[in-house]
Length: 517
Image (cartoon, rainbow, N blue to C red; front, side, top):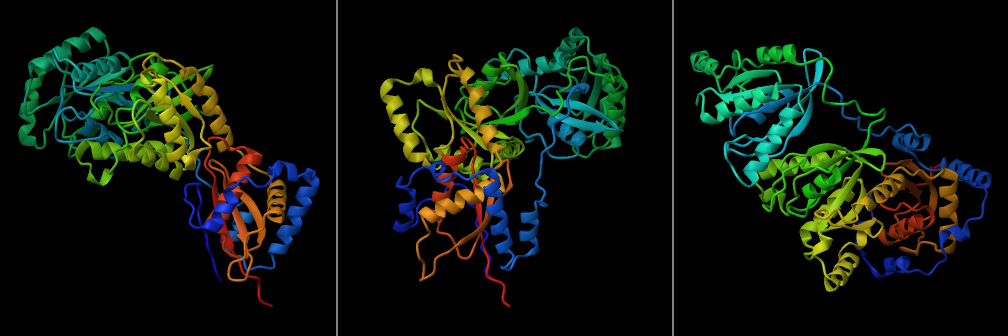
């Protein structure tokens, strides 16, 4: 039995001249061809489904047709939990300790100072209690530029925390920077637990004892790398953490929609997040690749709350990327998979690159709703605007269905247009077409424009069903393989009749042979 199961996400290029015939606007819109009532459409679908039983169907086919297949539905991130901020000077092992507490490699870690730059929140649990863990960048004295921004984010994290975990390198001992951090923590008035890190053996515990002089209470000797002593440390943390947070509020029931800001480095993702938040939420610098860890921020737009996730820039050749940038790229992909919608940012002042197209393809492959954002519009003249339109039409023909917004994150010009575009894309992403209407649509379409003969045979569409949404996925049962051009033709007509603006469509073709008697 032949079984072709071909995924199609509107990203293929024409393969032959015959397929191109289906992309031409020769036929009237499909909505003009269908004048059946819902009852008539449902009756036709029942007849087509009954005829399908004459063909060989496997267990997976039957499960799809019966609607018994379950698809993953990502849960919402918990909020309203007590918040614990992890602070310290650079390279003392804060992110390593965060990963140890989480029990997985979540935060980007490298054996060089200054890897973490933003304050990044993670849901954590210990001894049956849930809390929010906030990793921060290294705090330093009298620094400028990006290092000053990193230190400011660490201070903000302390202000927005219920308790603080102060990490010190026991092998180095007390430094002037540590003393300044102590002064900052005392001014905050937050309860503090002192962790003396890098104590890998009992022989080194004496080094941790010297940290009593900081005046922050008992230094807990731990090894974040090996896990030594972290249990006692977390017990001490829970003793000072309140059961209810005084700084974090609970999310509304159902949870806000998750939106990932993606694009190549330095296109303005962090600037847009700060503009939407109305505050300096993440570090912004002219240095490309400033963001490394995905940063979640709950933002209210037009009375509705959204989770915006700032991500590291997607580099052109990730397999050649090393160190912190490599792990940042992995975290970006994970953030995209967890999101429902991708805001793909371009630098309007620069020509589109292969890297930009690769980012778009990554979002389409992930099956996320898409909105194209041309940022830095304040730097674009009329000549460049015309060039950009031509580039978008030529290079992004595979996502011509995605809404496009021109804005400036720096000046906040037109950022108010994002909400409507995001809602439109998400509505399309969640759209379901009744089986009766879908089969009536395909029946009329095939009658007007049949598939060409291939080898003296003409493939016939037996039945179609939408097996899932988010994104919309359709399965078409046929007697022969459908040309890629004909599948693109079907998709185009689906969009003309049913919309799907801002959402990719996946079409699977399953070839089935008539059951032998």
